[in-house]
Each structure stands twice: as structure tokens, then as C-alpha cells.
Image (cartoon, rainbow, N blue to C red; front, side):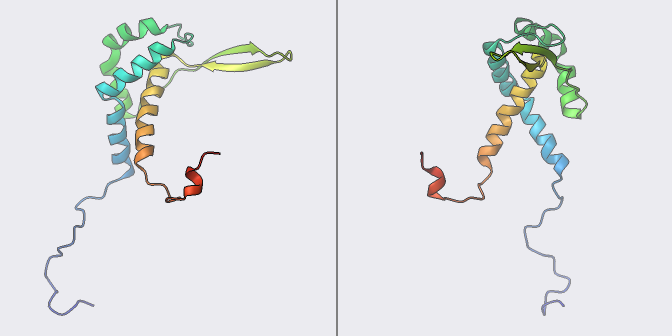
Amino acid sequence: MNPQGTEGVPSLSPARTRETTREDHLTHLMEQVVERDNMTQALYRVESNKGAPGIDGMETKSLLPFLKERWPEIKQQLLDGTYQPKPVRRVEIPKPDGGVRLLGIPTVLDRLIQQALSQILAIADKKIPSSRGNDKRLLCKK
């Protein structure tokens, strides 16, 4: 049923001309991840943390020269969704009680990408309104 006088009149509502899809959101997210400032900050964090080499044997000091040569290809793989992380290097850490703790060490490149993703997701998480509202009990320190 049309209200009288509105038939054939275009709507003035702010309806979108194109629905935003999940893929659009993911593409925008990955563009933020591979943005130069974000990657520079992630590189600084990975280099500062040092850490053991992964399965490929690359140390953190070798990451920047590697990126200067290979970044365009890696960036495109990330944007296309075709990037494949390398397997982690498994290390056994002895425990005081005599057992061992298994530790997985990713490659420095994968640590860089994880750090870059983490930085953007942390920002996105702060922008999402909480469903808990302003419950002061949740804000109190115990």
C-alpha cells in the first residue's frame, strides 16, 4: 500500500546504492594492515623484541633487507588473500618438574605480519561500541 501522493516519487531516504560486503570490510582491513606507517611500526616492534629465527633461519637483522627486495610481492599476496605463513619451528623447553613445554617459533616475516595485524585489530576493537554499555562495575579496579 502506498501513501496517497507518493506513488512514482523517488525515495529521499539515505539508502545505500551498494551494500557493503564482508569482503569489502576485509579488503579495507588488509589495506590498513599493509599501509606503510603500520608496517614500519610493526617492523620496529619485531626488531626490538629480537627473538629466535623460525624454520627458515632468518634473523630479525635480516628482515629489513629481505623486505626491501620482496615487499611488493608479499604485500600483493596479503591483499589478494594468497599469502601462506610458513610452518613454525618446534622447540622443547625443559620444565622444572622434568617435563618439556613445546614452543612454536614463527618466522620473522610471519611475526611481522602478525604484529601488523595485531596493531590494526587493536585499533578496530577500540572503535567497536561495547554491548555492556556504561556499567560502572566493569570499570572498577579490584
